Each structure stands twice: as C-alpha cells, then as structure tokens.
Image (cartoon, rainbow, N blue to C red; front, side, top):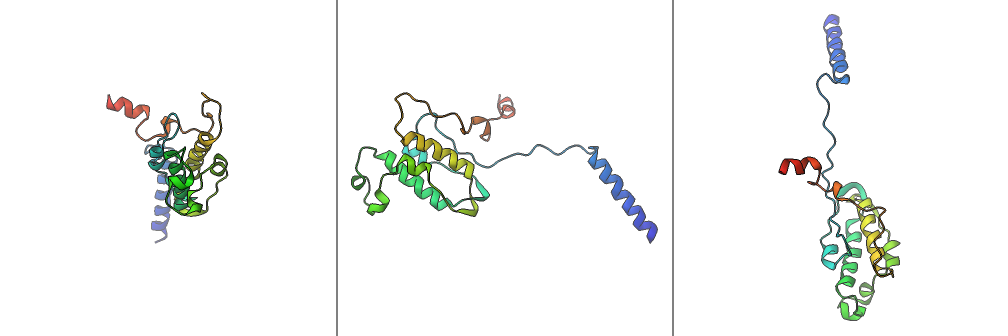
Length: 163
C-alpha cells in the first residue's frame, strides 16, 4: 500500500513539473467579453444616453441609481431650452434640471453585481463636460476615454479574419 501511495505522489509530482514548465502548452490569453458602452465621437444625444449599457461586475454602482440619473440627463438633452415644468409632467423634484456639477459630483451605492464603476465614471465625466459652460469649438478632454480597441470585435485579429 505504501508503494502505491509513493508511486501516486511521484506521478502527480512529475505531471506538476511538466505543467509548470509548459510541456503541455500554455493557457490562452484572458478574454474580457464584458460589454463596453459605445460612446459617440461628439456630444451625447438623448438617444445615446438612453442606449447606454454597462458591464455587470462583482461589485459596482447600483444600476437603478445610475439609470435614474441618466434618465434625468436624457430628459434634459431632449428639451434643453424648456423649463423643467414644460419638459416633464413628473413631480417637481424629478423635473429639476441636471447640472454639470451634479453629474460630476454624483455618487451611487456600491452593491454586489452592480454596473462597472469605471465605465459609469467615464460616461459621467463626458456628460459633465458636455453640460458645462465650455468655449465654442472646445474638444472633450482626452484622459479617461474608452478607445475602440477595447470594444468587442474590433481587435486586429478579428479584422484580419473578416477580410
């Protein structure tokens, strides 16, 4: 019996050594298949804001709180020149216009299986910039932008395969 256990330990040790040295190949690269919101090149429209979908992560912002703020922002983008009473038939506290400062300083509860904090922060930074008073022709800040290279299906390998 002792010889059988010793032989089993030896076999497991040799297999572990072979795996550690890569004799059975290596593991493939990690694929991040979480959705990434597609952000417009220029300013957001109300339709862009309503179409946003964020990745679900193990610990992130409360989805309903984020959606409530984005709904208010979309409503303001729909009717930028109207007063709050004209823009909505909802109660006064819901109809108050969203300011750039409110968007920039907004905070949400962290919950299990919430929406990605980095994606939401990116969108809110751009929305805050868009809602602020900015010089005509000013370009959105470059920091923190999500590039297309992170979008699913845009890697060089996929483009080569599709040709």
